[in-house]
Image (cartoon, rainbow, N blue to C red; front, side, top):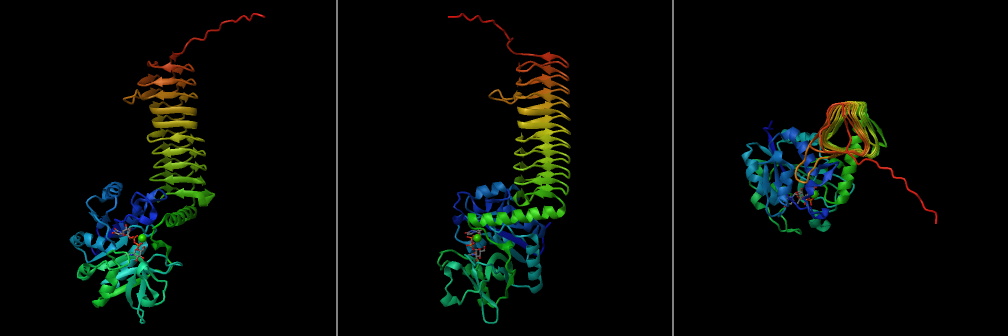
Length: 460
Ligand code: UD1
Ligand code: CA
């Protein structure tokens, strides 16, 4: 789906010096997702696929994080400013065959789809040559200051570093949010006029306002009031503030939808995760990625759940970690359970404390209650895995599989050296190191025989 009215250009090439990080600022995360994820999330429903992105600093990292945006990245080799970034993206913008281009700073993760669509609708109505969104935050901080003449008409945006009360008049508090809508045919004439004669030595996109006004173009600022949704994130402190506000916004939405949250302010649910009404979550806990928690599931405190599915009736006890795991109905995990990618618990299965699973399927009603490693294995229904059982799945070169049939009983402290198969209903004696297959119903024991030797003590 494409919007026939406008395309978008996301400015994400900067280093983000104030973030003090070696990775690109736009990949810094809030609730487990990058700033750029949120920007795309707000843009795509409105603009479809015509969303281009300027990348520069550590461009490879940004491109790798969004493979689906491949072919729509534009490299700005040297980061000479937001105006230069726009110049670099111009060919792609004009190739989209639309009338307008929405330009947005990539460091505005609180942006919502509604703000984007309302802004485009306003521009559609008044046909501006150049429009931008302004806000009036409590602290104008490092935002570009909006200058208006005595009639209220916008005349310029002056960057904080270049602002001088003696020249520009008293500060009004109205600042530039970093969201613009440019009529392509009009702004094209101004692009080459941008220069870097300012205190930063950068080409500013914001200078287009001044240039457009000088040429008699129709320039509008759409004021969004004291909108926190449009804050740019430049520092770790601003990132923390934005994350906190997203967390509370998300938790509030869950509560209103009918999810029960305890210690609600410390429940973190990422934007791609789904928690159904009727689920119960105890904070602090984190639920990220494409996770889903069904109605009737309970997640206790200090759990971290990533890209996992928790079915109704399941109980995830405190301090459990789940990653790419599937927990079936009425299962129990933890406390201190660790389910790694490919861990699957079928209905009613149970994993107790300090049990680690990876690429392992635990059949219906099967149990591994204590201190166990289950890797690369399939365990049949109703099987009991004793404390301290280890599937020895790695021979130093390759991984091998362990298969255990239904209704088997694996005694405590068993080492199952894969590849190995234990039959249905088989019994393994505690402390065994099993290297050969055990047939259905058989007993397998592999351990040194106990020898009791009487000792005579000589009295001295
Ligand atoms: C910018 C605006 C300022 C506005 C504020 C809103 C300019 C000159 N100033 O300031 O008026 O109030 O945003 O948040 O635009 N970028 C590139 N290439 C570059 C430089 C920057 O792609 O060469 C990208 C950055 O990655 C960032 C965005 O442009 O996502 C904005 O750059 P940033 O340095 O954060 O601008 P601000 O100083 O915040
Ligand atoms: Ca910024």
